[in-house]
Length: 269
Ligand code: B12
Image (cartoon, rainbow, N blue to C red):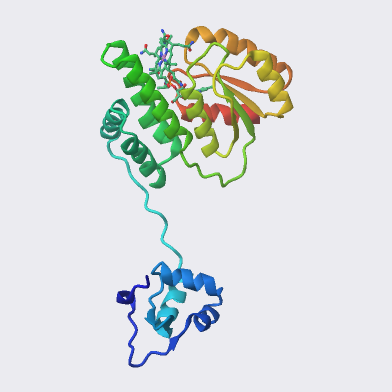
């Protein structure tokens, strides 16, 4: 439906064009101008079966199209604790839409992806772990919350523009089930323009090494949450190093910002 209320033209003095002439006037295809009219971006009046558009309306529209659009508004987070508390509630109560919306608003508000992961998602996951330890959260609740936040993390829309850093494989040792930190590491690295191959959890060491060679990886990130799993991770890192593929090992309490610094150093040294 065309929106007549937007038509600011003076019908006494204005000249009117039909869609064919208007498309020529703006130098766009007939279908394009038809769509703009249907979407209400250009005010038009329907006379019989044809649309009529005031020339002054076309002039206004053409002017607005070349005006630079203002930069997107940047969200400033003053109180992470408040947002953390709400995300915790949303995850535990499986309020999927509200939880997704909370994260997406920060992303579209241009809050740094690594800040969202380090300042919001990680503290909430730690709190879930504490709740489980205290017996306040059941295993089913924790599993459901983990799956939900995993989906949200995987869907974070990261800007990929920028000079690529290199190809990185992210995974965990073969005995490590904590896949979420690897998912967070993957998103943080993508946001820093790495090309990320996220293998999820539990990849056998030799398979990982063969894969890294075949994929010509510049870097491997082994995400470790349980300290007992560090032994295998360091052994794998040593083998990767012998085939000239740097590998960084870590996790549990180390921020993603630090991971990014270590990743950049690893390929520059
Ligand atoms: C969700 C969860 C699970 C899920 C995992 C689901 C999934 N898909 O990942 C499941 C149910 C599978 C699970 C299993 C277990 N879990 Co668990 N789990 C958690 C919980 C609640 C969140 C884990 C998480 O995502 N943490 C991520 C953030 C919050 O932690 P972070 O260490 O700061 O992570 C950062 C770094 O890792 C960094 N990073 C990531 N990759 C890399 C790589 C490098 C190189 C670097 C530098 C940094 C880096 O990024 C992360 C984000 O900032 C934690 C609670 C907690 N405090 O973490 C318990 C927790 C980790 N689990 C725990 C335990 C005990 C277990 C089990 C042994 C339970 C059991 N009895 O079976 C098993 C272990 C299974 C196994 N073999 O691995 C303990 C570990 C205690 C310990 N220190 O050893 C914790 C701490 C719970 C607790 N409070 O006791 N768990």
